[in-house]
Length: 159
Image (tube, rainbow, N blue to C red; front, side):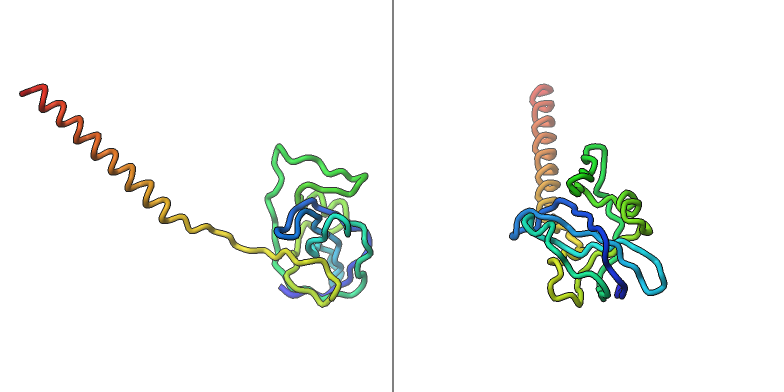
């Protein structure tokens, strides 16, 4: 998705890591689109020491993916609003905090040359088929050996 709008105002910082750069924060801001809608914009990753550094405000064009992450659960800590540290991207709570719609656009590219490092949405489906095959054929082999042993013991008892 490509969007053009204006950014500015407060930022939310979501504690995360981005190997190999280490730990830091995702920068979440409000993006006001041309038609007046306001949505959340995940601008990308900044290292811890750049958390409060000034960033571009004003008109911006971004490309990215819409995302409704399911990162919160019973064990997720509440955000520390005094220090502006969030521990998960809770779209509904962040939308309330920034006065936007509960829609999150995760940036993959931007026309801001000094933008935070994008952490685009990726699909990481591991290919573990070899491991599955080894497991299931191994279980089948053990079952066959144990069945053979049981039949051998039954035959030995009846002889």
